[in-house]
Length: 301
Ligand SMILES: C[S@@+](CC[C@H](N)C(=O)[O-])C[C@H]1O[C@@H](n2cnc3c(N)ncnc32)[C@H](O)[C@@H]1O
Image (spheres, helix red, strand yellow):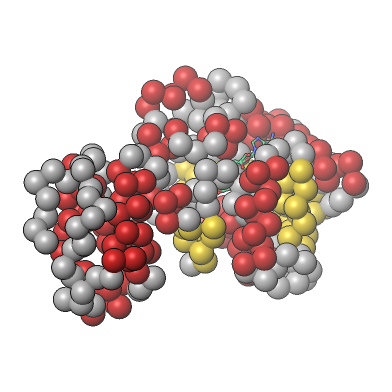
């Protein structure tokens, strides 16, 4: 089969002659649909449809494509071509070297959030059996990663979205840490305060995009849950401040608060100011490899 001259009209009928042709055809289709990384994404979708690793895919380049695999591939291409984010189409995303199930109920975990996990692991290295909190757990990526990297830790993971908690539950089970990741439905740290639970560290990647920035967001971000993306107030750091305020009643003596911020809208400075005003000490900003402000960390007591 030759690549179609009308790639947007993906034909379910005509099966590509081999894996390579299927790839080229998918790339053209995605490109015509306005997908920027069309080559990379066509490869990801083809691997997903065939259930192959990258090396296996290249080894099968000249192999014929079965009709069932072709139909699966076309279905995935159509979803992506119509604007559904790649991670939701594939159904999973890698975070900290681990795979997490994702769909429209949760934010797609971002590489920058790995800094949040690193900060917490590093700051609690000396604590024997740590208790952690992940506020706004979404897919559970932060909570599950902390549990995996500290096999004696207990992690409390809260979210206002019952749908998100259902995804986090699946991910905890996928990674065999369901017994140590306690999912709590509720607002910020309220479930812990109500139950009188204490922790050595509170981590959060709260929604931080001000609604006024909506028009700057790419369609992929607009496909993510509103409550995961948009902050409850105009500055973007309102939930950060509420979590910091509540965390004073949850953190043990010397406990760590780590909050991810946007690298713009002056968020790091605002959060630093709020934490200092609340009596936190050792308040500092952690930057990523590109030098962007990513996490505000502080110690309580
Ligand atoms: C930016 S997402 C972070 C998801 C995940 N922790 C990650 O880093 O990939 C924010 C999450 O916070 C949740 N959320 C929003 N407001 C909340 C609140 N007041 N209390 C608890 N969770 C909240 C959302 O449902 C969403 O799952």
